[in-house]
Image (cartoon, rainbow, N blue to C red):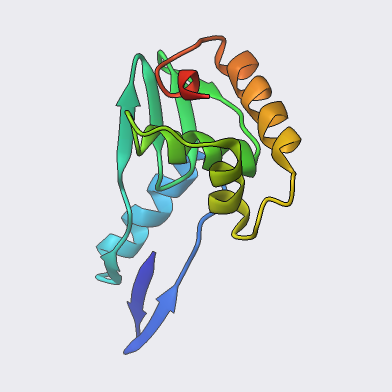
Length: 127
């Protein structure tokens, strides 16, 4: 999020996944005229809601707790429905470095994601 406070630009990344707290902070900033913009993109697929503004995931209204990397993988795949990624491509996209045969970590994370989501959606079927 980018804010203009006393003619200075402040960039803030919110890592707290408490949605109520996040909304209160946004409300306070908006009421004081400080907010310029923030990413509020939300993706919905098969009862799964992925909110990018606070990096939270809900399945049929119930919050699913993911690690940062699990969230990044899920968001990457959900943002590109219909596109096929290799394990190497996912690794390089998330870690921003060559995979160097680290595809086992991707396989493990996909497995954990499937268990946490208790589903096999289009998003996770591409691997």
